Image (cartoon, rainbow over all chains, first blue to last red; front, side):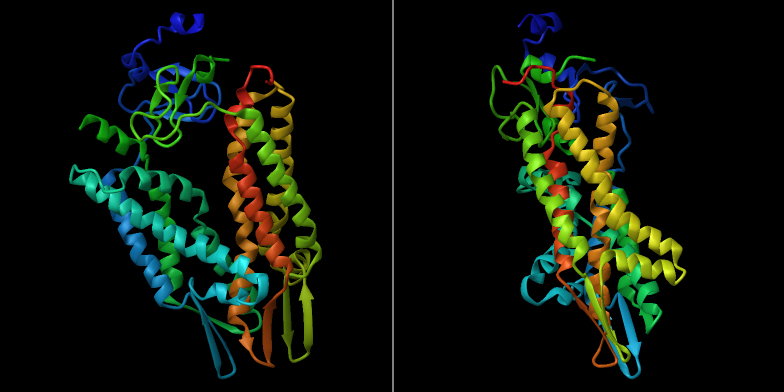
Length: 212
Length: 203
């Protein structure tokens, strides 16, 4: 353990001065950054310190708006198609119906999860945690919810769903007439809001908890 | 290369980012999660297992039809490649390229890139570590766009339900394709990027 004593890691206070890169496990001494500076890992270039995160107020607003937009995308059609006198409609909740039979349900459940359930849980959990954080209190289930948000994050695919609707407009629009529903615009808006939500650095919520 | 935290028994909590000394604690003092040092080889082997499963399912995903469309003039099944060719022939080059990118280029890039990352971790290569870290972030980023074809088939089959005039139905290929996307995503997340930087010899 000579390396340990060289760096001088023997007390908790010293641990606070250390940075460990989450991406490559590199160990660095934290530096005092000037305003506007940001630090990247010298080994793997992962952002480490001082990267700008949108404010908690903005992210809360985006998350709450996102929850409402998802409700719109479920309650109203995203696309409709007319052929002769028959009109069909589809939205985020009914799209997986296409895979209702047999073992197609694997694809159906995947679609329900990634285009609706996961993003909805994500924005609701984030709104819950942030509402309490802004009132300077710790939300019930704080630690569990932050962990959940971390796990769910890569499984939100509303952007992919939105791009898929655009492809279908062209693909199906060739044979039948396609109508754009309110759900389509709410999906587009959700995709934009999600970009802000995903830029939020939830580590700062843990830091607030330390100072209490 | 700088020192690795694990060489000194220092761990960063994977849930909340707290730095802890594993000589004195086994759980994170802030969020209570059990601390662990990077387990590079095990993560690479787990990732390899998921990747092999994905590559095997990629074969039926491409050979089997993904959709059946019928109109007044008769019906036809189409595969993923068939769908791309159809866009190409009808003059929608941009869409053909988009679907080609999401359904063919992205999965194959993931197979090759993850295979390379896993092989280099398992052979303890020290070459191009920073570039491999970047490659891993790229693989993580592109992964879910492959779901595009699943969404397109779902929406098309839900919309085109006009009885004998025109009808679209899904075919088994799309389920295999969906499974491939899920498996490659799990393979990518199973791989611990910290294993790129492991320097100790294999236990």
